[in-house]
Image (spheres, rainbow, N blue to C red):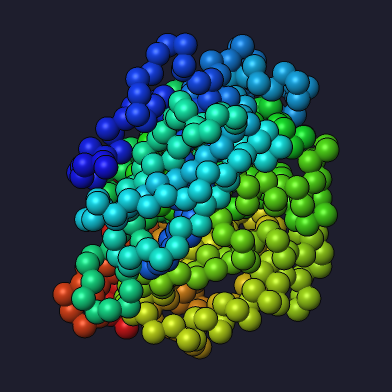
Amino acid sequence: MLERLSRRDFVTSLSAASVPVVFGGSLHAAQTPSIGFATGCRVGEMTPSSARVWVRLTSAADRAPGNGQFEQASRKKPDTLPAPPDAEVDLLQGACPPANGRVRVRYSSHDAPQTWKSTEWVPVSTESDGIHHFDLQDLTPGREYNYIVEGAAAGDDPPTPVVELRGIFQTAPTTNPETSPVTFCVMTCQGYHDRGHPDGHPVYPAMHDQNPNFAVLTGDLVYYDNDPPTAVTPRLARYHWERMFSLPRLREFNRHFGAYWLKDDHDTLKNDSWPGTKAGQLTFETGQDLFRQQSPWGDGPSYRTFRWGPHLQLWFTDGRDFRSPNNRKDGPEKTIWGAEQKAWFQKTVKESTADWKVLVSPTPLVGPDRPKKNDNHANEGFHYEGDELRAWLKANVPDNFFVICGDRHWQYHSVHPQSGLHEFSAGPASDEHAGGTPGEDKTWHRFHRVKGGFLSVSITPGSKVPPITFRHHDVAGQVVYEFSPPAA
């Protein structure tokens, strides 16, 4: 039985890399398996009683050092560099090829370490990219859970030796009024060549220091089209995930905190893409499947809502799966959300009894955005549906509803002049990735900053309607702007 460790000690009791472990015997050098968890582990879709654990078995414990290709490549003109054949991808920096074998998860509530449970061993293969999603059920609400992902080569029974990696996550609390404070962080837009540090983007250790209950990753988590080599095959697309999420800072954050994952254009296919488009051999539909495979998403619709205690409800919308072509003439039939998602959103928002309602959208609903953009509800190309949604929100939830968006490479807090809807842009994951703003407009903006960083949101119980606070942070975690609305 494992002894109880502190939250930080538990996840650091093994090195950041997966290590060989043998239960019931010693490990000799000859037994060291050529497998590992080079791309880490991830937890998502946390509810009061469930969570999804993402596990990927790799053919080595660490990312490939690389052969010099694309390591200093500019993201300005990625299509000028020929993509390597699939057979050579495993030689590139950050490659983490999958392995055949089997995996399982052991887990226990942090305050009840004597109650360890285990899933069954499940086979994984290179055909599934070494990935399996474990759905943990019957969890206790509002608890920290320690977990250990374990992997072994195929064949031996019982499996030995075993590699393992430790992590921790929190389940959502119930709507019982006796709740603790909640803080979550929101980040977006992380370019590999713009990461600013060899180990990964600076926002990850900065968010880690906030000790959030969870995080929200709003999309553009890889750039298939802007970060060389351009993803024109499924193998190259998977390589983008391997290279990004094997970075030490990303691995560390994702095994310490659960997160809700959203997708956008660059991590589905290419800039401003919609269903039916393609890039080389990579189709939009394959990109949709790959995002579900590479993230700890559930099996249901890409849009969903989660309650986090009595005071907060979150909505995560999808801006790619149901969208009309961007170049279609604007009007009642042109949509980003689609009729089904829009009806679900309006129904669940009206039914919500949460004190504070927060929509996290991969793209802006308010803006303002650049005049030449035509991809989101802040642009002329989708203005009809944007006006429709903003007017509905003004009529139905005027005081306690807020929008957080990704996609934009600058930070802002804006208020729509007609509807009064507030929107906060999280900003990109590094200063190197910042830019593109149309400029500050004081008619809209209460805050505007062309730098990288992230957003944190906190609710501190203590009154009937506890205050909510939105904070923009720079890449090092320093607060650069803060807003607390009056209680509705």
